[in-house]
Structures are given as structure tokens and as C-alpha cells.
Image (tube, rainbow, N blue to C red; front, top):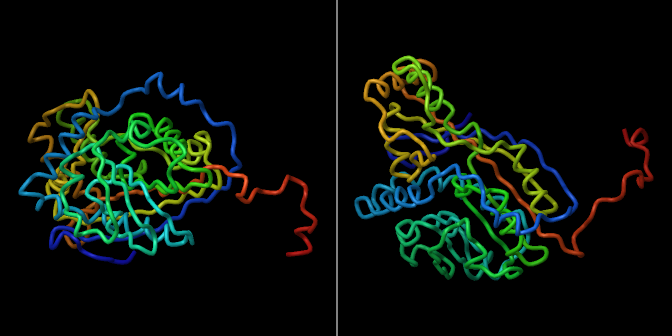
Amino acid sequence: MNVITSRSLTKAHLFRTQTRGYATISSSGPSPSLTTHTLGPFQVFDRETKRKQRDRAAYKNGGASSRTVDYVRDEIADRMMERLEDIKRKFSTIVDLGSCSGHFAKLLDPSTTRKCIMIDSSHGALHRDPDSEFEVEVERIHADEENLLQVINPNTQEAIVSCLSLHWVNDLPGILIQIKEALQPDGLFLGAMFGGETLFELRTALQLAEVDREGGISPHVSPMTDTRDVSNLLGRAGFTLLTVDIDEVKVSYPSMWELMDDLRDMGESNAVLGRRHIIHRDTLAAASAIYKELHGTEDGTIPATFQVIFMIGWKPAPTQPKPLERGSGKTNLKDVL
């Protein structure tokens, strides 16, 4: 495991492990009807609370606090850009859904696209940084990411990207359908979202501390999507030529307290419906000790794992390559081997 960078000064160090899980190619199946989405998803997250958390984080100290903790989003945006650069195509416009402060959009240059449309539910995050920090023209739309088709017309976009926003969406199948509907035929969707192993160290430490001090547990880290589910959801939404892979970002902190401070300044505090609003101080102290005991390193720091699921899907088009029918091969594999 190699050290890459430290974007939070002395507070945190980033490590990278890459475990590209799998890549799948799928032919287009029947697309779920948009009327299914209108029935309403099961609500897991309090979207209004999440918006307020992200606004507070963006406005704190004139944006200085949130800029200090950009290191995770900036790292994931870099890795998304690597994947976009593998696609040898120039786009007239790219929609950045859940753009936050434009971590991905800032990496775009005129050789990739002419314009980026940034959409985010947090007004503070959306407008935190000036246009001068971007190399391409930017348009900012303050809107809920769950209602994409209210601000983007169907069949109009060449490419839609989403960098670390979808893990707070209540209806992930529904938003994937909306993304596909907003794309032109042969349009690209490139996304990154936190996976199920994200912050497992923090989750287990808090659970063990609560059991020990309070005799039960409550959710403090939001539920994340499993990698296998993402490929299935993309296929069900009607995307084809799917690619899904996994990366991990490991960040080291002096203690659990600095980790929780950074999560708050990122706007990534707990927003699960029915969550507890107060955790007893002695429970947190116990969780910090358990965290260091179970996961602490020799240099006295503690690691935090951010598992990231990267996904690529294309809206079906007649011009796309299609797999040959089963049994149509003319070369025996034994002859090749």
C-alpha cells in the first residue's frame, strides 16, 4: 500500500488500494417505466437534513473549513477523470449531478468538453467556489438530485457524471432511470459512490461501544450499496456496456475525534431517518478507545476506509457494438490454448 498525498496538512494521510472488482457487458433489456418511480421510494435518508448539513459545512468560516476536507472528493474526482480520459470522445456538455463544489468539474478542460452543468441540492456547496477556478464554462442549477428530469429534458445530454452524491439518494433505481432518460442515445453515464465497506472501522467501534455502555445499538453510519447491486441496478435501468470496479481510499487520522470532525465539515454527518441526535460522551470515549485498539497502527494513528464503487454505463443506441449470439464462435478455445 503506497502513500499518495496528504491533502489535510498534518491531519490525514491518504493511501490507495485498488481492487478492481469486475467488469460486465450487458445488452439492453426492457427499461423500467418511469411510472414506477412516481409511486415513491422507501425513505431511508432525511434529504432536508442532509441539505442543511452540507450548507452549514460550505458556509462555515467562509468555506475555509470545507476546503480543508476536500481531500477525499478531490481524490475520487481524480480517479473518475482517469476513467473519462480512457473514453476517446469530446463532449459538448457534461452534466455533473450532485456536483458539490465542482471537484470533478474543475478537472475538465476544453479538450474534453465546452461546458459543465453543475446540479446540487446544497446552494452553499454549489456556489462555494468562483467560476475562475474552472477551465470550462459552468452553469449552476440549484435542484434536488432526486428530481433530475425536472431540470433536464429527456434525450438531451451527451454525458452525465456523479461524484460521491448517489449514496444519499433514497431511490437509487429511480435516479438511474432518470439519468438514462436524460441521456441521448449512446450517451455516457460515469459515476462514483461510496460502497458498503466505507467507514467499517467507525461503524464497528460505535456499535461495540453502544452495546457495552447502553445495551443496544442505533445507526450512526448510513447504509451503503453493495457492489453487486450496482451492476444489477444499472442493467435494470436500461444501461448497456456496463463497467463496474472498486477502489479504496484509506485515510489515517490522529484519533476518531478528528475523523468525526472532518466528516462533519465534509457535510457527511448521519442523515438516516430515525437517527439518534445525541450520543453520550462516555459512549464516544469508549468508541474512540475501541477504534484505536482494534484498528490502530504502530505510529499511533487510526485508519478510515472509504470504499468507492465506480460505474460506467451507456444509453443503448443502434450504432453500439453488440455481443455475438451464444454458440456463434468459430474458433475452438482448445486450439488457442
